[in-house]
Image 1 (cartoon, helix red, strand yellow):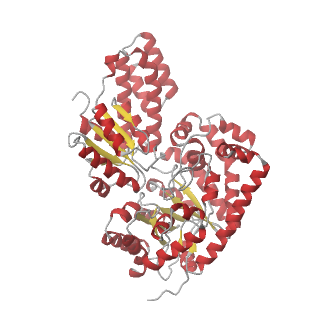
Image 2 (tube, each protein chain N blue to C red; image 1 turned 135 degrees about the horizontal axis):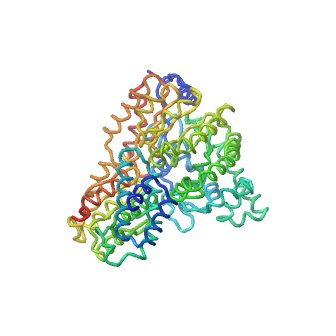
Image 3 (tube, rainbow over the protein chains, first blue to last red; image 1 turned 120 degrees about the vertical axis):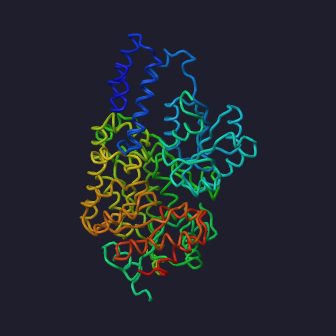
Length: 211
Length: 381
């Protein structure tokens, strides 16, 4: 049955998947194994996204189904079972309030088991620095859609450097107009074209599961 | 070689897939021109005369243009009125006078309201939503005052368009906006994430609501065309692009809408300017069915504009797409080379309008903007 859970997530069969999860839990199946199956499903969704078989719409729906299923499983998980793959601080930089892309990245990173601190939108550099120090995060994600945001990203990356947090701390950027030239301007460690790339960058900089 | 066509003739020739005396240049330049011209963003939104003077100074110093694509100049009052969630408006509600205008996206409806929209009637339902942000509109006197303000602003727009035409600057779409219902619901009513999930959970309800909204939204666009006298209409597309939506969902929900909304205007002799932000490359082929030479596809630098020419160049005018990031961070040589390529590869047989993709940013380098504006004469095709 647990195998079905993975496949049902990939096929975006919300009702059937949630029914399967409820049945598995009532049978006493290992909740951690169920979460792993869900993550496997998310992995396949990510592959289909990269192969242009799935688009952002399917990515959003799969993440929503994942969240629903996880909410059912969560009460049965022991505290230790939810071990984090790494800590990430993320936000839309100062002066910019666009949040769609950032929110999708946050959701997918959480699905992948990262501990994500979402600072929201219009976030000053100082707040990023304080949060990284507070949480000991290894990765910062800066998002923005406006060209103004390039300057705010640069100021934030510089502030993280000035605080002595880099180069151990990695900084990634993303958002509609971000490209190689923006990466160079900001002085970040890498950039992502879409949410799936952001997940890959997190794995690269924070290490794969089990690594 | 000298120009021998007027700006209006040049633009219309390109739209009809003909070859004008040279490629026309029609950027979205309101934010940049106001900054460059020495006025605040607030003044640009609320004082059309100042905005026009700033645009003329920009043209005088950086280069002329055949027209402006969509412009927010003078639209402050209307933009504050038109959204159920207030936008970030420079100089309003504590914002700095030079703050960047931004939409604030929030869901103002629940899924069950798709059917309520149909039962209540789309016009009354939309008005109810506008009252969330503007409770004073419940009072008929206040509603009349708001409408009077819109009509007053409309008269100012007409005077401005006449004034700018005297300087050779056409208004491509005036303030004529027509939203396809899916875009309207996603952007203004439900917000992206919730709307996307609704497409999977409540497909029939979304489809029915969109059908109900189609006519009133088209008629609003038609009213704006009548008021402005400009027979072209701006249709914004983002949420139904391939950056957001799969081909399966596009075919089911969006394509019938785009076809119907374009048909509504084309049948009335009005040119839809499909202002497509984000990536539409995988969807270009769907637009081949639209009547030949009756639409403009305006791209923002995310889609592959060269592919657009290949797939659609014999069907509709292509417009775009000097990227905002290049205008801010690039060197003039890079902008020059990109414009040369656009003009030579897309403009050699006509059917092309050079534009920014999407907006010339406030903080673009003036020398880059100048390079873009001058390129149409330098690489005359």
